[in-house]
Length: 281
Ligand SMILES: C[S@@+](CC[C@H](N)C(=O)[O-])C[C@H]1O[C@@H](n2cnc3c(N)ncnc32)[C@H](O)[C@@H]1O
Image (cartoon, protein in one colour):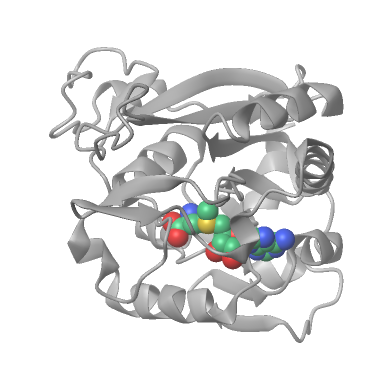
């Protein structure tokens, strides 16, 4: 079994593709490959069982006319057309389709991480169970500097949920326990270096210095992705993100010596990704 795993981790990225010269490949350098297009279509072009870990930050379906607070101002929640809900049934169908497509490309010992809020995460959890994944952890990403709630009619939203699941109960998944125990938790008031890492992570909102290469409305902090990748993969492993956005997963993966495949529908976000890769931020 170890031999098969080793072979999977040493192949070149191009070798995971069913068609090697895919026209929607827009970047292929230093073990990072970016594709412009719909993940449902591009995932079909990737060989089964070829990816060690997937991180997905999908549409949360929350851009539906609500309000939020940004830089002290009241603004409408509008992340983009891609984030609008099409109703519960359609949203669930979409969630299940991409999770199924991810499961096909995931190695039998691989794991998947999915972020969300109450708008999408219950659909994700139900779909994961229906598809045969086995949920390992529910991480709470606590945002100590999250925005206040302007309506003052409910609690201020100050966390996101990140589900971590393996492909099936039989999977021999990677968990770098000692690395996480000794992780430099600088600034995380919930975890202490030298003690078991808990399932609640306190990480501040994406710092401005990580946004110097262009703006994405839902860019994740690098620290979140570094913890996720470092905890659940080995050096040389292949990490895939079907909702690449501004490429936080790719920047973190490359900095940790992992190979990366990113898929993104909007070219302008891939342009930001390339800038980020070029400047390592
Ligand atoms: C929540 S954002 C990801 C942000 C990313 N984690 C980051 O740190 O920048 C989701 C992204 O998925 C893209 N997207 C939405 N539907 C897609 C699809 N079917 N295929 C590929 N990309 C899609 C959107 O354009 C958006 O950039």
